[in-house]
Image 1: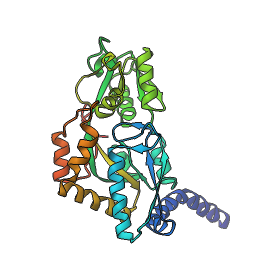
Image 2: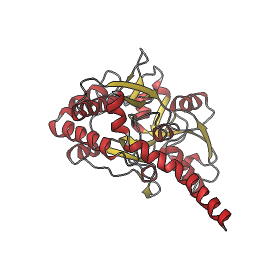
Image 3: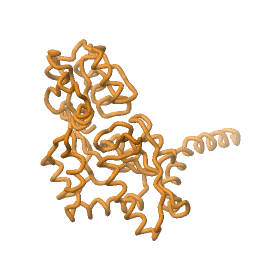
Image 4: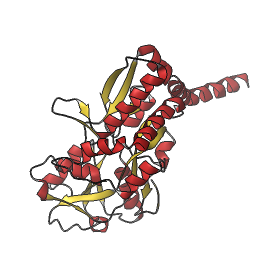
Length: 301
């Protein structure tokens, strides 16, 4: 009996260890920042215009700017005149594990706040509202997701499009063939080569990818919006003190109108013209943390 009790306790400790580590890491984030005078941002390689590497391989973008504003607030609140900012480039599949294991302190990219992700991490107020559409080759004959029955479809690993189209295949389009790629860049290369018929992804990310291409006319965004994707800054689960500072910074940026200049810098450029949408304006006027919705399926992502 004693052996059984010891064995049961041992199993329970092993199962609880990852959760305890995550909670401990979250609770210690601000203290770690205070002691090391360093904060580590998880950035994306090519999530233009939110988080991408410029020609000098430096992380820049709309989300990066908002995170740097939040870091200024952290410096004030912790009374740290100097705070070093480090960057770690993460993929869509890596971003949550890297956050949970402590490799990054905040993730500043194009991450959708979803109910499923809320079980693993916490999110700031919404910083942008996107919607998923299909990218196809011009004159491909694909007009919407229903036309993808029996066709190969590119998916970027670790994204909401991967989850949504897996559910579509399992519920409605059983003959659709899903092909995973490690990044948006790899997925669009597959579309360009003709090995896949479509690439579903958030409209603004697709527009951002095309904005740098001389052959953008070879591609078309088609069909209705398949989802509503509220982007947010991501922190570890239960990292309440850090999240409170980030939310305070966002509320100040929204209330002061400073958000307009930041938005214009990244969404009104020579290659990208994207006025602020009604949903985005609502998010600025009434900051919220509503999770994303899969419109085509009728429930939360």
